[in-house]
Image 1 (cartoon, chains in turn brown, green):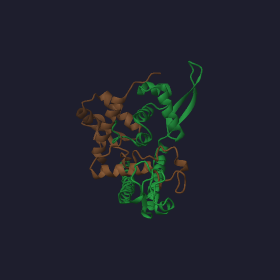
Image 2: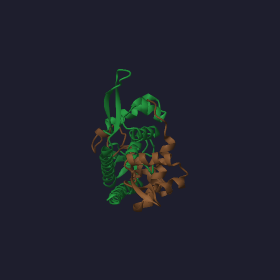
Image 3: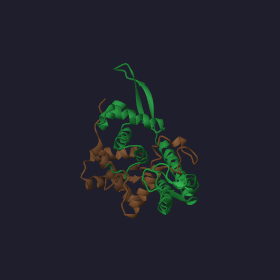
Image 4: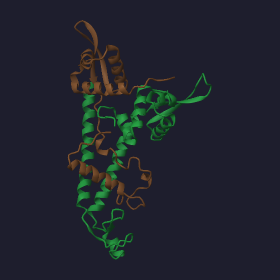
Length: 132
Length: 183
């Protein structure tokens, strides 16, 4: 079975998630959100369902001005992994053999040193590190 | 590069492991639960061998599982892939702990030793004891070993450790807040 490519929808889903998060505890009406993003109800609902499936938002059916719509509320907040992004230990093939007195050691690891120094220099220079 | 700021935990954890292709596979898996490798390839536009490489890597790390299923049309067995989202949190916690322990070990070592270096970028730095053994001459390039100022690496390590701990604390708070929203 061929599945549709959905990178554009993924970007849109991130944007919807961002707006739902910004709405906080009170949530945001789905109909209002689609107007804001210039989306059709069909496309918008598909994205909201996708985010709900991913357990990022919750959809609650509400009656608004005599019409049924959904209130979108965040279920999970986006956690950050910036501090460990690009850390060499994550994909290091020697991690199982890496210990203080080992042949591979955090005491002498040049990759670890280069990563920490370059991140520190970026921080001092005011460069914002993306999670990408 | 893809922006991951407003992504769920699973995609972020997968992004730590590989390039943009990993992120595309992760998103496709979330959008299409129980998809086969061929279906993921068609959803992402990636080559099938690349998709398989990513899937096997994620499988090894316990982030996805493959369910064996018979393809009724073709008559052979295929694997349907399913995300193990609950494992992503544990995996992330373990990675953070590993990195923190390596950084702390390095910091302690840097603080408790004096280092000697010849200045050649490809040559290693020696502790005082090691430098004595080599008569303060670099065994790799023959240049004299001079005391090296390691205050920058110490500051960098202290900053990074603090940053990781702080990020974890903020993440815990976010999770608590999200739980409060749903109650």
